[in-house]
Each structure stands twice: as structure tokens, then as C-alpha cells.
Length: 586
Image (tube, rainbow, N blue to C red; front, side, top):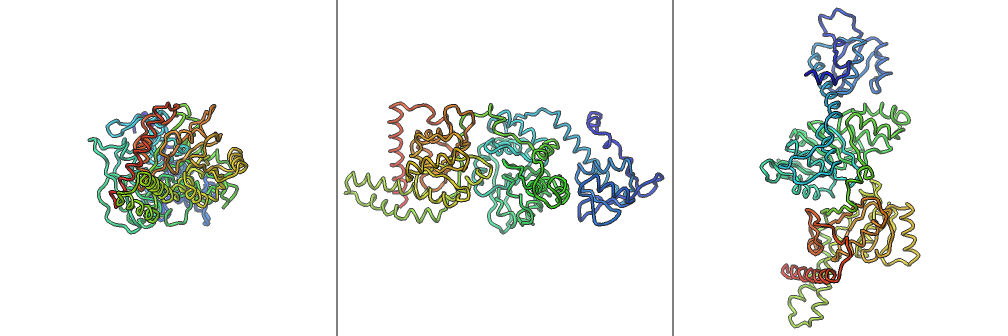
């Protein structure tokens, strides 16, 4: 340790004279210090006055044994224990002396890194060789935070780019293989973002393996492994044995409930890793048990044991409600455990609209079933060469309408799952779709959020009531037909989600403007949810939407007559491509 590092240490970590070896000590000691391997804690046994003092000063040290106190073997807690031993020296058992010296060394390194983090430049520019893209200033600060902490929580509000900041960290550290655990509906998005942003030092793409099934198998060599939370329990024993150096838990609030096989498996994976990062837009819950569980995955007993946490931070022993959530958030930030920015805090770095194309799953069996009558129409179109032009045009319309509806219905439950995550993060959502059958699925899947509907099936009074419910905060979800959005003023929304697509860019722009109205000072996040099955891919081409990025802003200026004509021609070409593709397939 050099002189500059020593200047960063508090006095109680510079001196370790309170620890006396088991033999040869000639000064008074007040008890013994030993390590309990099963409980992963340091145990003080000695004078009742000292152990009673431990239990009063340090939550979580109490036991049901007189004259005994236990300290969690956390780097921060070890420092506190060393401070206590300067006043009340303890005899360290010979078998544990080397472990104690190593623990104290780690405690010093922990404090030095924490203090250096406060002095380091806040912003880090990613290596352009391994990272393809540009980070905003606040994202550069997020990258700096992730590089400074081995175990931390990036808790930016939804839509601020936690995924890209985590990938920038991986591109900078090169700590491969890495494991990314995410909810099922975000798996494809991670695949897409990895391909888009991260490279090896030689410029080649990273190798990615998506883990499948609950039954472990020999994983192929890869730079990144992706899996969703539902599979963790099946890989509980196998993954820790791989000693994966970096683990990222996306939407880590999925682990807010302890006592499950999923939680236990995540805990074992995290324990075996060197760097563990959690991503969540909703990190501080009022229920203390939940935030304690999340943080405990990242850094074991960072907040002490559960019993002492509920007693000191909540409304009493066993109570799960945090008394002062803002104070807990402050502690997590000061200790370098959490970084959180809200949209309002970084609004100057954000464009008025942010558009994201998100790949999403669909139900293949449902899609195939709904496409059966469409295929019958395709066969008629293909085989009846004598049909009139008007008849063939009618068949084209039926084919296009049938596949669009099949696409929307097949992915509707997954769209609802995505929207549910937004609502749980307290976003205010406008959900757009085209077909009534799709809206019916949204109504069923999102019933618990009491959504408002404007689908064209409502009376004027019902439509006005839906607008009033959303704008006054009686619901945070309003489901709207793509072609029924004209004239609506719904600027309370923070997110716009397109569960189905329209062939016209102007329709989407008009839908976005229901939220982004004149005088709006917020940055609106617009999600385009697309599946690989059905009409979505052709619709993306017709709209000029690319999965990798948007080229320019779509429909943000009024269309002139030439652009309207061009849009109509593109729509016609889209129908022709759609019919041609289906005809070739039968």
C-alpha cells in the first residue's frame, strides 16, 4: 500500500494492534476472535460487557448465547470490528490469524476503492475498439460507476439505457465469459444489443450462447451466456461450478422474494462470481424485505442480517415496511452500492422522443392456427389465374389482413408482459394496437391495472371517460386503436408502446403525439414491439424501422403531397411483397 492510498484510510483501519495472536500476547485481552465457516461470520467470545456492547452498537451481532457476538464477514463490517478491537483487544485463534489479516487487507482495499471512486473522473468514454456507439454524458457517468464497483446496482429510471451501460462495462473490462440473467421477454433484446454494441479487441463479434431448458448440459465455449430467470433453479448446481467472473442480473427486482429455488440459485451464482451487477429501474421498494433481498444477492449481508435490518430500518423486528426509504437510498449511494438517475435529472441529455425497436416473442402455435384460413386464400390466389383483377385485389386484402391479425394475436400476451413491467415501474403508458381481438387480450392480461380503452367501439361519453380516467391518474394505462388516436390529448403519458404496427409512418407519428403535445417538457419513450414471426418484418421495412437503429426521426414534420404518394406506393409494395412471400411458401 503506497502513501497516497494510506491517506485515504481512516485511522481505525491503519492500526490493527487490537488483534493479538493466540500465543505470546502479554497485554490484556477481552476475549477471543474466531471464524465460523458454516455461517461465514466472525465470532467474538469473551467478557459479557464487551459482547453486550457489540450487540448494542452493531445490529445483527446478537445471538442467543451469553458472552458471544457474531459479525458478518463483510469487508465493511470487518473494518468496524477492527475499530472495536483497538479499544477492546481480542485474541485471534492461531488457525484463523491468516484469515483475519487477509480480511482486514480486503477491508482496507474496499475503503480505498470507495474513496478513490469519489476522486476519480465521473465520466468514462468507452474504448471505441470494443464498443460501437456513443454514450450520453450521464451514461458515461454510469460506466464509470460500474467500473469502480465490483458489486453494485445501476438503478436508473426505465428508458435511460441501463443495458447499453452494462455492455459498455463488459467491453471495457473484457471479463469473459459473462452471464446475463434477464426476464424472458427481454432475452431477444439482449441478443440484439450485444450484436449492435460490443466487439472483441480484433473487431469480431462476441460469441453468445442462449441457455435452454431446466436440465443442465455441457455449455459450448462462449463470451456471453444468456438465460432467463425461470431456468435458474434447474442450473443451481451447475452454474456456480463454472466460476463465471461477471454476472449481470437485469431487472433484478425479479429476485426480491427469498425462499425460492430461483433466489437460492441466483445467490450461489453471485457468490461464485467476482463482479456482480444488478440493473433495475425500481430498486427501492417500501417493503424492506424486498430491497434487502435484492442487495443481499449483490453483496452478502451488505445491509446486515435480515432480522437486524427489519428492526433498525423498518418499523420493528419482522416488520417489512422501510421507515425512511430516502435515507436507505442515501446510504446505498454513499456506500457506492447504488447509482440512480431519474429522467428529470438528465432531461437535458435526452431528445424530445426516444424510439426503441424491441424484439419480442410470439406464440408460434397460435400463429400457425390463425394462418390456416389465410393459406387457403393464398392457394386460391395462386391457382385461379382466371380470376378478375378486382377478385385478386380482394384476396390480397384478405391475406394482408389475416396475417397482420395473426401476428398481433400471437404476440399479444408478450406485449402485455412487457407493458406490465413498465406499469410496475410506475410508468404511464399509452398502448396502441389495431385489431379488436388484440385489444381483448390486453384487457384480459392487464385487467389488474384497470386500463382505459379507446378502440372505436365506445360511445363518445365512454371515450371521454377513458381520457378522464387516464389524465386524472385513476389508471396508468390507456389502450388506443392506431386509427382512433386523432384529437386526443394524453400528455400525462411517459411511454408509448406499439403492440401492433401500421404501414403508415404518419399514423405512428400521430399516435406518439398523443403524449408529446405542445408545451411538453418531458422526453417521451416510444417502444415498437416486433416479432420475428408474421408481418412485422415486412412492416418494419415499409416503415423504415431497423432493429439496429432508427435512421432520422420518423414523421416528425408534416408530409407534403409527394411524401403522401410515396407512402401509399410503399404500402402497396408492402402488400405485394407479403403476398409473394406467402405464395412462395405454399
